Length: 164
Image 1 (spheres, rainbow, N blue to C red):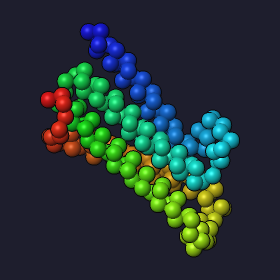
Image 2: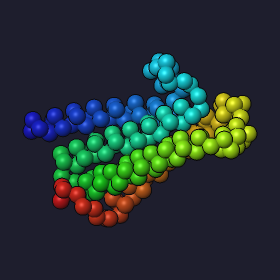
Image 3: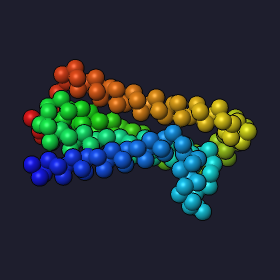
């Protein structure tokens, strides 16, 4: 009984961690203002990175929370859901890491910098419509990843989990 209560409290702690991650995805400029880091300028590139970090942090919190609750409830479907979320977490982490490293390498070439400066002007990137579009895209990706994991778990797809 004691362990169930502790697991539940830890799960709720991860839920609050997930709320902070959603804050990163939805309002990256405000989260930059709250953090007040002099080496973290408020640029569109930084806001894009904060959104990607928020998406990965949310998936991490969702995986940890669902695994804790799957261990408490001994539910095979919840354990399967947490395993699919873990696969989503790995996928998003690897994709964002590869995209980040690729863009860092690409910025070393002059023709890429010229192309980006020509097609992505500061007026366009600082436009509120651009920010709303990026927020919509990242929220849609997050919702799609969680929905696919939920549908696979609810559809009876099996995974190699330790709770069965």
